[in-house]
Length: 214
Image 1 (tube, rainbow, N blue to C red):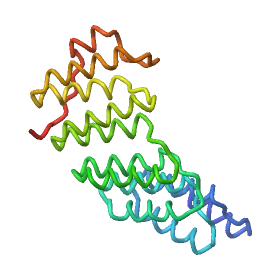
Image 2 (tube, rainbow, N blue to C red):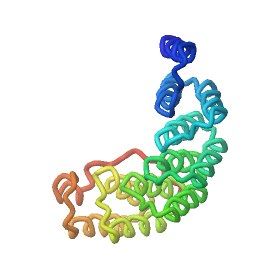
Image 3 (cartoon, rainbow, N blue to C red):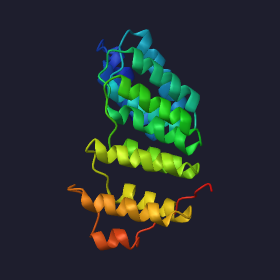
């Protein structure tokens, strides 16, 4: 980062004005170095120069803030993103959804996804998987099942992580019938996904170690 900042200073001294790519690259470097405060300073500096962030700038900052458990700041960033003219993509929201789920605030995670959908962005398999596991960790098994069924209904193909995580949580919650039904539903769908064989799914060999509130 020292070399990058030095190059940035040389750019300014030579009269070469930075653009959104310059700031996004530096912000990404600071976030990767876990220097989030320095990244935020650049964010504000970018605003002072009337340079608008793009979707990747938002995504990098939101992801870094969530990793630092600075969820309130991440939420404020999402509000700014919502007010912008940027076309929303799921990767811009998934880290915040994950952050709030891991913090146990599943209701806020649901609200974030609703906002995302309100902007015309359909959740992807990562969004659904995050929400499903988040609901399982709170013991909200039926809501997790509803999310999984909705995922299948809109044609969003789950992967082995999604399926085996939900099955694992259902078994731990003492819901073997529901776990078996999930496996049967997946087997009945014609999805091109890496789930292994149907026998592997039905025998529940691949169990994720996810704590479940019961």
